[in-house]
Length: 150
Length: 68
Image (cartoon, rainbow over all chains, first blue to last red):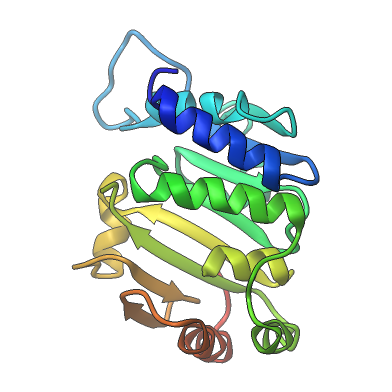
């Protein structure tokens, strides 16, 4: 464990053991590590994001992490609506799409852990009233939530 | 909240964007404080809202425009 402390890692491992039902796939779009640094193209936290996701993937055998090279797999990335990196797509039993752009650290780390559990179960604690309203949607709604890593 | 909605509904795309890593996008939507939520480009609000009010904003955003 490098970025996630042993204590947090154990906590999340126990939480996943209790909460995860179905498999969860994490698709991570990043760039290759390069010795040559080009300031305008350098991805700020690609390396750290990859480390966090790799560590999270070791905490449950229900989680599969696939690392993609954004440039080499541009077409697949575009199909998933990925237009910037680092980008993380969480899929499994979710009906819609869940993506993270940027590093899921600080408060967003707990959000990542919780969403993995919800996606695994394919259900949430949203009220029945909310679910029936959402069921009335007939076209896509994009909700962008801007956060900072604190 | 957005992510839970995406788990429950096929039409919801929930994007979490780390503002400091994407300054151009933050500028585009004038992100001054977080969490800032943008629904279908047009509807915007700041801060955590209770489920009912969050849903109301999402439905308003859905009615106001199309997803990117």
